[in-house]
Length: 287
Length: 287
Image 1 (tube, helix red, strand yellow):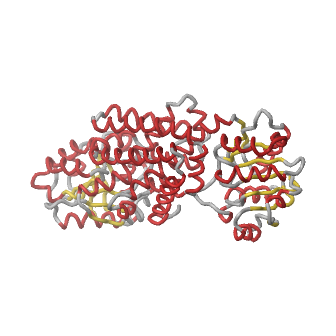
Image 2 (cartoon, rainbow over the protein chains, first blue to last red):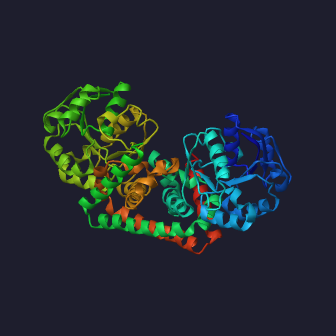
């Protein structure tokens, strides 16, 4: 049971976390802080927050758990401010989707309190953003990856793991670099591909007509291109190295497809598509 | 009202067409033909077909409308055989997703009967295939593009348009080349990108683990990579020119994204993603 939870950055993730913990009866008071006063008022109105604080220091005062759910680009400044005001014994975690940059920022921010920081990443979300997009079941059955450091206190990790388990999530651990590589492949690269496709089609002369003929497959394929551009800019800046490497490999792969089409190489096309289909069907199901 | 409909190739599209027309009371007898006897038996069992024929000539004998729903790769041979046995006054249409190649085959096949061939393409489907995947509402609210030729009889076009309207589809016309270019952009290119992504990830050492962390966005994004490899091989062979041109343009676009990440160009990344999101949201909705 968390007596007082402080959520810094009350959007889709922070808001859903509060709703899920409330539904599980696993939290006492929820205090929010963020840059946008209207958004915080809406959080109180929607029952996501009990109250919001005027300053970050006030928000985390007396909290036993602090969840940092701000965009990656704001993480460094917010962690530094938390480091200066962190109450004794409070545990801090974040929800950033690239961990290397967050861990660097945490090392700079926390000093002696570093063992109480548990880097985390709930693999959940929708293309919507903002506190009003939050819902209690967002984390149900989803994975949350924690990337504790050598210095991290085991009790702090347990506290954060228990919090996510109360939300119905499956909690796993991996090291920071491995996390960033896996997420670059399953999430960051697909977002780049979808953004690039929609941007490319937008440049065609007859783009309005082209989108008119988009069917369900196109809608599904490009859904992630409706995600928050600020968030994805920040992901690119935070996990650029792993992402660029994957984009370059992907460009090579796409060139193989193009070459097979140019050569009318029926066997190679069937091999490529067949292997992709059987891999997807066996590993995530034909759905 | 179609008195006797012959469906050549009884899969997802042919089967759904029959079910939709039956539901609308717009068809009398439905006769099927295809290579796979078990599949045809299943079609009868599922109520998709009244009966199946032992030969293509028998299937189209006495039909007023013949729908060719075979894979693109089989189209040329099937149209040639239909051309040799076509009953007087029967109208023929197809459902191929690339029209240039089909029209060339039809010109070779039909001779004097060419005016009774109406090239068509229902923009509908799922990643499933086979007659058992068919359902009556597949075409409800979907677009069907007809690409009639200069020679095509207006009455034949009206017959085919009416058939699709009975299925709840919105029927439109465009010329063959334009169709192939629009579909390359909205359908063929996205399929290539999804196949290439899944194939690429399959080559990584830790691919099983990577797929394990795939969330909803990845599932949606790669769904079309579970589509029928034979169908997509055939699309590549039939519409290769338009498709390769788009892949090359896309590679350039993706290089712009990679360059912006390499340069940590925050403004350019935000511009690219923001433009893609606003285009998608305004043209197909944030869903």
